[in-house]
Amino acid sequence: MANFSKDFLWGGATAANQVEGGYAQGGKGLSVTDIQTAGSYEAPRYLTYVLDGKRQKIASVPGQGLPHGAKGEVFEDEYYPNHEAIDFYHRYKEDIKLFADMGFKVYRLSIAWTRIFPNGDETKPNQEGLDFYRRVFEELKKYNIEPLVTISHYEDPLGLSEKYGDWQDRKMIDEYEKYARVLFNEYKGLVKYWLTFNEINSAVMFLDFGDNGTDEAYQHAYQKLHYQFVASARAVKAAHEIDPNYVVGNMICGIISYPGTTDPKDQLANRHALEKNLYYCGDVQAKGKYPTYAKRLWNEHNVHLDITEQDKQDLMDGKVDMYTFSYYMSSLVTTHEPEEKVGGNFSMGAKNPYLNYSEWGWATDADGLELYLEEIYDRYELPIMVVENGLGAVDKLEDGTVHDDYRIDYLRQHIEAMDKAVGNGVDLRGYTTWGCIDCVSAGTGQMSKRYGFIYVDRDDNGNGSLDRLPKDSFYWYKKVIATNGDDL
Ligand code: BG6
Image (cartoon, rainbow, N blue to C red; front, side, top):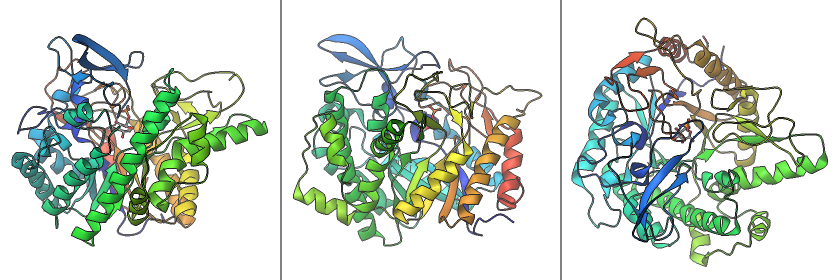
């Protein structure tokens, strides 16, 4: 018998900008993802904009804002995969029905901030946007699927990003709180679970890639994070005021790391990497204050932050109710020249000889999930949800379906790891696999990096019927849910 509780929340996850499309419909304004072009394993995605009167673009990672002074712009000769995505905006009923067929108990989705506040700084919300999500939540309710709603999933309004320099102004805190309050009031009774910022730690974590790790970049990232921490804390407080039944979580990108060798220097380097990449954000959001090592992290990059006494109070008053994270892979940290390096997007540093790597260079490591769950539960003693996990792979359509045993294997191993962690006492409440329906990849903008139980007929250039087809994993996951994790 598996260890999952009888009310364990099984389901899947997506984000507005990666599934909805309809990027300029229903009064929606532009978000940062709307000016993101398509990339691939080899080539980055770009943000397109005008700066100093000239058309320009910059290689981007998920969540990145515009360079200072830039004005985001959509150019006709560029392809922006998120503009139509998989057209969930018009097909949500069909998709939710398929989720219900699998037996989903929970569906994690995000709200596009720019459907509610098109530019971000309006005083009144856009009714059409509010109505759209109401219809989605009501549809979910029909099937007893609990929504788990990310308030901000890499989709800042372009208007705010331009005006406030990608979270470099504390006015962003008020804009975010205004937006969150509208949601909490509007969807009272329809939604119970909220997440404040998707993968909030990516602001510092992704600085490790390329040559971005300048003191200036760290100053920007830590200041952005501080304002987001306060915004998140104020949202938690507002949620509890508006409905004491609301459960609000943080969301961390859970790329755990190990020391690459037995050299004590590697042990130390890995500890410091974990502090910077994972614990810094988790500690502030779950414990309500900055950890002691924060000073070291700031000093390493000569960072000086705008933190007020009121901010500190807000952080303490707005601790999250649950800890949630995405989990795809692990990485190695070493002070030595690695024997072999990992290629691919967002996979870091040295290659781990004990693990297999996906086509995009992500290391499959189910033991790492058990380790992380046990570590985090011990550290915070909060309920946990794994809100993203899955294998991005190229799928082959054969006889109208996809035989994705590789995906089933990956998910099976990770569910087994969760089961062990629960058996060892971890209070794990739910599991939402990433991209339960194929969608646009956040990192590369590709459709061909597929995670879904449901195949969507669309290619990397925007061709295809958008028809939905259940894969083998669809029927497998249905059985997993029906047996509460017993039959894997
Ligand atoms: C997480 C994000 O980083 O990983 C998702 O929250 C994203 O938005 C997912 O899609 C998988 O990454 P990718 O780059 O394969 O889409």
